[in-house]
Length: 79
Length: 548
Image (cartoon, rainbow over all chains, first blue to last red; front, side, top):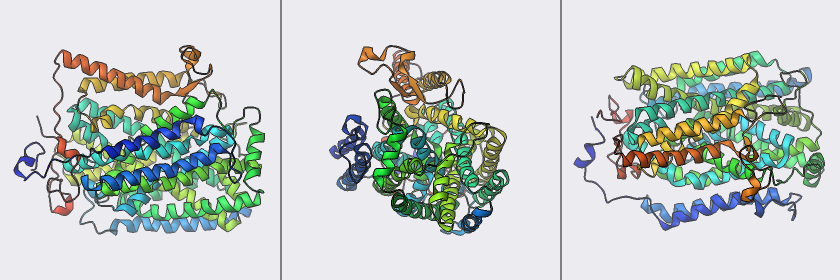
């Protein structure tokens, strides 16, 4: 049966794939920013009664979604 | 009980409908056979974006999370909100990693993370360690789902023991029959109910409590002494390391990997990395239910020990107090079903680990796919019975402590599983040494942490005060700085793995044989090199690891 070691050689191997892309570096932003406590560890300004600590961290969700969506769209063809 | 009759009837009714769905799920998406791990354990490896979103969402955001996170805010303030940054940073972190895991797993027919470790590191020792770590970390997590159901039952004043046994027996039966299809189908109902309940709660309850100003005001008043609605100098680093460490750990849990491997292609995973944060938004709102409970002057019900309080009951009690009876019933059903989905996936994942990496690897090397599926099905029953027994026979606090340890120990598989998706550089003995070091250090630190609330001298929390080791002010940190144990342990793990790898390479110690190739990490749906599943008319699954 298809053993990983020998089998690929018999198939026409498609062009060398990779998931490398400069866009990937953008993903670091939504990982680092939500951990920078000095950005949000305060009560003012308030937003609809929410202290900054809470609404800013909720807003980081949008940052995360925007970044992963952008990186996905820009790197789509490259797998 | 009598004044809770409406909510009990509604909750039971929804539970029954969902259970029926669980049994019908076996026929959903027409499998040719369920006698194969790809079908029973991974739902055919063919779920699209929507199903995957519901499935992974239902898998990661568990009933326990929904009950425990607000309980954390209720009891301790801002620190509990770490759940939000944790579930924000997780998706960009694993965006590339999970797609690679998907590719290499579909290329070689891996079902579990330990399958991958076996092939990548060429070390059966490391694979066994990863499998055992996964099983040990998952078991208390399943038990904790019962704590979620128990909190709801307590709020309705229903006798918990029998209700728990019945709920889990039904769950075990349909998981046995339908495999991963059951939680995948039920997740639709679970998540829809949760979204409705929380969106209603977040509008309706603040209106009744006089607005958000009042809610945050009540929390400020409760934590006035510690200024606990924001972080202080002692717990800031704990907040950061806890969010980061928990994020590193989440997709190392075998049940998370199960959800990922069940998806159809790489794009499904990447699209979900943008869609799953919708649940994080929900979780943030749920967390604030803890402050609403403060504003509503909720008093938690007594715990198992005399004089103790079960803070997990605050959310169900809040629903009970605020909502009309019928809607409280819907809310309780949502939490209870919310426990069943992850419990089913976790049991399947633990069963697959046992079957693939212990039973097949050591006891029954020439097992057919049919035998594998049968062993997994039986083990999934054993796992659930074990979870019920642990909760009923032992103090639930034991599971909570174990789950805490579980997060720390699953993190120790990071180099062998996640880092290995990037590099094959690590020597097999470097990985083993790193695991041993991280595990040993993690357990030692946890052992030293007392829990003042439960009066346990050991394993009382995951925040390690650095002052036990050295003076934190020497490196510019606040004197009372503490950090998440798992984070410290995994850093040491990686350092040891690097050092031992360098030594092993220097002395030219034979390394394991890596049977994966560079291209394996990028293949996608439709590639002829992917391992054909049972749908492809294959009688035998290809052996993922050639005998060397």
